[in-house]
Length: 103
Image 1 (tube, rainbow, N blue to C red):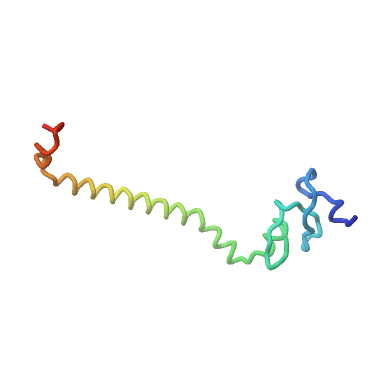
Image 2: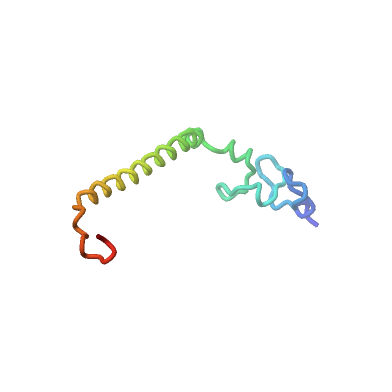
């Protein structure tokens, strides 16, 4: 029996190990490893491998998403506002007499 098959995950002791991280040489289950450059790395080794540019890009992720959400909500509000303005130009007597339930 191989050492991998007999091992359990470092973070989840009740789960069998699925991979040996080449960076820290510890065993992890499938949930705890990520593929990067054809290697399965644990979270701490993955953070060490990431470039500083990737880390800086991650800093602006939430503010950018918040700005996109605000722009989308503003766009939808503007669309409905102008649709309401256009519909308000219809004279009130336009539908009078055309439908039986309208006066």
